[in-house]
Length: 386
Image 1 (cartoon, helix red, strand yellow):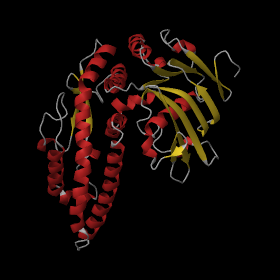
Image 2 (image 1 turned 90 degrees about the vertical axis):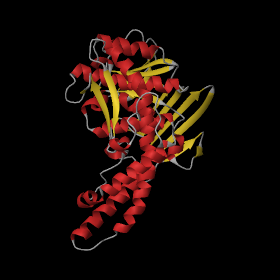
Image 3 (image 1 turned 90 degrees about the horizontal axis):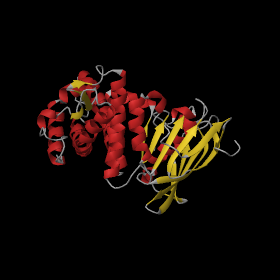
Image 4 (image 1 turned 180 degrees about the vertical axis):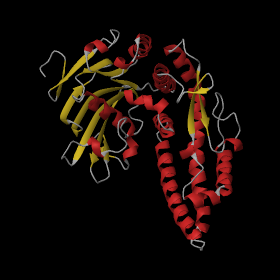
């Protein structure tokens, strides 16, 4: 899989940009703040419908513009598809494939797959649990796009159930029953969608675990062994082998466990006005020799763990039979010699890798490919006029 062409209009700092990309290494060089990361952010958006830098779409639209356009031509197994996304302020985004509209924006998911490693990835180790849950869910959708719908359904039901818990809790404290009976219905919806999402996460961790351990050993052989695991709020009610290599979760078992936990915790949820059980409160555990990486790992170990998560994701998607585009956003300057070498070894073997760097010297010699230069608000292939 590779991106043959990228075009953006009114996206971030770019009024317009066009890049004809090649197989192998494509390196975009430009000073910090010049807009190079905005270009690969657009490619990532076409793959995931999200940004690795911001949680909402509005900052992606150039200042004082009504909309932004991202258009990518993707070549996969000899077939080319063009994905066009229109990001509009205050309105629903729209998507087209080969110029034809699709019913839902998320219908484009799966056409382009990317694995991106960026400085923001340090938050995977040092950040809040939500960062690690997002990592799992984003990778899950890359592998099986239909889970975007499962994720959206779960989030929708969670919001509605939380609103009902809050209003019913207020009513109960005021001496009335409120609408507590309706909670049984929402319990069922949340358990159904939650079990599907939880089961998929557990299977993903099981598939990813050995690759993470191996990738970490490759980039930090002198360090302690790295492992990942999944901690659920209903861990005591589900088989302990779920989430371990070779296992597969039973969604019905998870559904019953979630439903029982909601019933048991009803009073506490009404008191607090929020759902206290479900995948939205779970954690991807990162450990070094059994100790939590967060708070205990050194700066170098944290970088190694973040890199291992991305490299393992890349290997897992490759093993699925659809090699993703590898995107490395300004990371070589952050890595020491060993980590740079390991990352370069993976990148040089990729069907396509996109690299950004502030200076040419930050890019390893192994990534000898096409160069683009970003300067004065324009981007051009090296050797042509900018």
